[in-house]
Image (tube, rainbow, N blue to C red; front, side):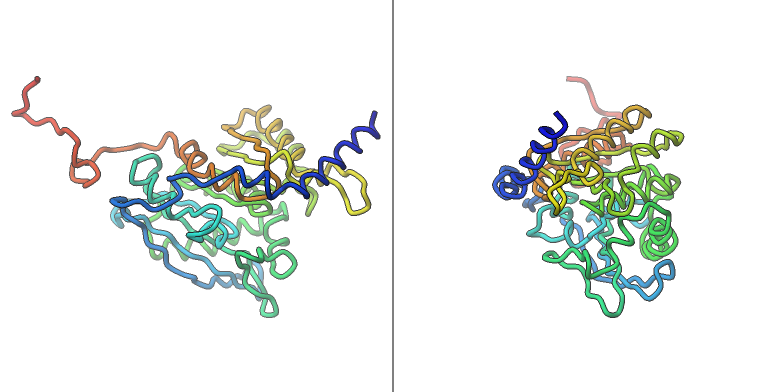
Amino acid sequence: MKFAFVCALAILSANARAFAGPLDDVYRLGPDSEPHAGVPQGKVTGPTALASKVYPNTTRDYWVYVPAQYDAAKPACLMVFFDGHAFLGPKGDYRVPFVFDNLIYRREMPVTIAVFINPGHGPDQKEASDSDWGDGTTNRRVEYNALDDKYANLIVSELLPAIKKQYNISDDPADRAISGASSGAICAFTVAWHRPDQFRKVVSTIGSFTNIMGGHAYPDLIRKADRKPIRVFLQDGVNDNRGLRRDGNYDPKFDWHAQNIKMVEALTEKGYDLNYTWGIGGHSNKQGGAIMPDMLRWTWRDYTRKDDAKDPSNRNLLVPTAAAKPL
């Protein structure tokens, strides 16, 4: 029975590699991921280089999206995206600035500043790009896959102060979210895991909760620890990398989808605020990009919304006055 199970998984993994493209192509971006007339567009600035004392002799680029509705007199929410270039591009799989424009305008999420940060690189390495996320050529593996608090310290002690010098960011950790894909996803969870005093919302797509640097341990760590005030959305495809090693043997610690399932089981047992979805795709950003608007709606579902009669988007809002009479 065990041999048949392993063989079945080997066939599934081979099929996942063979058919990942066609399977993932069923996911298409919707209208929330494109610009629309009449919807104010936010502004993206950058790249800005961020050197680090946490990871000496490294630097990384980041970009900042500021929504049109941002008012420096009012604290804005914050969302940080790892592998920032992949979430930022107007022709990429996520197109987050367009999504933010539309959802903020329709009050489906709060006024939120987004920071898109790339993994670090040394002087002999190159900056990550859309065609090369940086595995093997940057500091990405060390920064993103380790389970210690080192990268969380970079975000909290080096990135956040740089952002807060320019923008009025809420100090409430419930007003801060963090997101990533693949190794960037486990990194997002790790930052919130170590620093729930700073980030309490996590959006993970095709998360690498596997034994790249011990990430398969998270389900057990979650069960052993007190529940932390973190809200989590997990996305993955049943045809993600399924643990078939180069020697042809199956290793469950390298089964991306099985590990995502274990994450859901552990988070559910501990009573976390959790949502998840499993698609039919592989290790691809197609489904994550297609459902990013819905993941954001769920993530920010309970923010306090205040109607403002002076807001142009409320031009049809009926504002009661002393002279108003019932119909």
